[in-house]
Figure 1 (cartoon, helix red, strand yellow):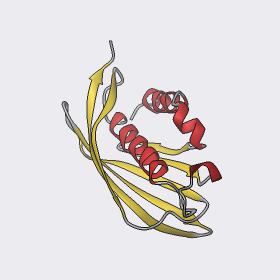
Figure 2: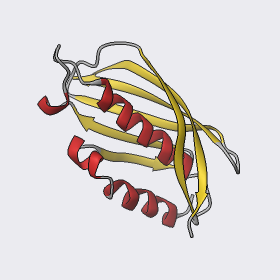
Figure 3: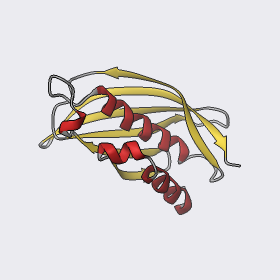
Length: 140
């Protein structure tokens, strides 16, 4: 992956107002893999005090999407065409970590996966697994 691709991913992430609202940040970018973290804020909890599934989905979708973008030519963007989520456990803790990765790159479709973990102290709990399809889009 070129330094320009990483810079493009970070610039694109910074332009997402939802990620800023959630307090999310990119922690790692490599070819085919992106890690995003977000604190579990009072404003992103559901009625039982757990992180809302919307937070889980949002950062998982972005981590998976940017992992797809990392394997595409620099003159492309990516759009999510479908994303499935399996919630595995309540999101308890201080922070969510989404680790997106490319399963199968392609010219027309990129198959991706994201695993989301809740961090409580030193303990990570696997709270969701997401599988999706991203569509490369040439930038014009």
